[in-house]
Length: 339
Ligand code: NAD
Ligand code: UFG
Image 1: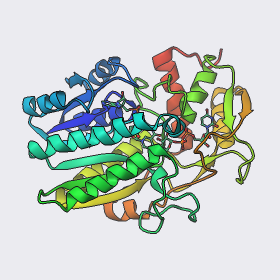
Image 2: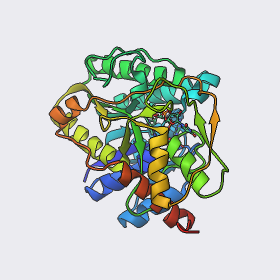
Image 3: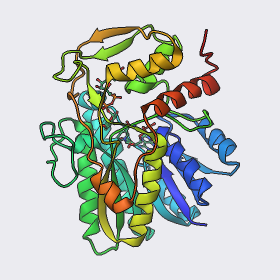
């Protein structure tokens, strides 16, 4: 049984990955500073998998802690999810973003080097691509022109990883450029943090639960089919399945490899709202707000490379993402669908 260290394993994507890896027979070690999550996730992972998880509460920038984790566990590979993820917040607080994302990753890589751990799967983002390139965004055709500090932290980390792949140590690196993950685990026990006021899905869920009165629509005059922003939403299960395929790939291929993980098609904010309204049988109140700084009108993924090299294809659709999200509200927040 191999030991996998998951950074940010209490977060939305890391917790889903932890469940999947445990189900596949790996032993999981999580490090998380709980800046965007809480430790109750560990109990939920244990409840779903009926297995123990080793948890370290702390920051990946903490040298001593990271070394301790490597000393105390025979870490075979890293799934590196930890990081800050809001584009608009990164514009306001760039140092916070460069520190947590870039400095944190450098510290992790330093520890990997000194403890002879050479496999890493890294959570990158579609935001590394240039805004104006024709759609869909393809890994080998689209220029890399990040337009905000968050995206730049991701590209900087990709470059560091690429440099490492040419260093004297034999690294095996998988970069995954996520589009927009949504939905949650079929148990309804884990999902995106509803305190996350940034992303669309948790914001819609807060309105459904009546925690917020309105869903803010950030811009209704984009040059898109209905004026709202268009993104490529991908079910978290499919996304995590992509991680396992990528992990398998790097186990068999040295060096640096990267793939988009998306559905390959875009949906607008209004289209997402419609699917939710159909599911709950009620209207979702909205308010038009100015465009968010750093947001762009629309993008979606080319899925060709992941299909070809990883033999990976998403299986779930937008209805599944919405249904699972509403089920999460019912199971984890006691929401009654017809009240
Ligand atoms: P999340 O905020 O739910 O999870 C990240 C976790 O990392 C949190 O639990 C947080 O407490 C922890 N963390 C943050 N900084 C840390 C640090 N310095 N040390 C230790 N722990 C730290 O986010 P997520 O949605 O699960 O995203 C995971 C990764 O995927 C992030 O790197 C994010 O940038 C990337 N990503 C996410 C999306 C998305 O829409 N969710 C899209 C593209 C890329
Ligand atoms: N939106 C709203 N109202 C909200 C939240 C979002 O109208 O309350 C709109 C946004 O303007 C955008 C779309 O919904 O058009 C999606 O916004 P999200 O904040 O959910 O997602 P982003 O595309 O801005 O960013 C997310 C992650 C990034 C990641 C990126 C990759 O937050 O970390 O997806 O595509 F890099």
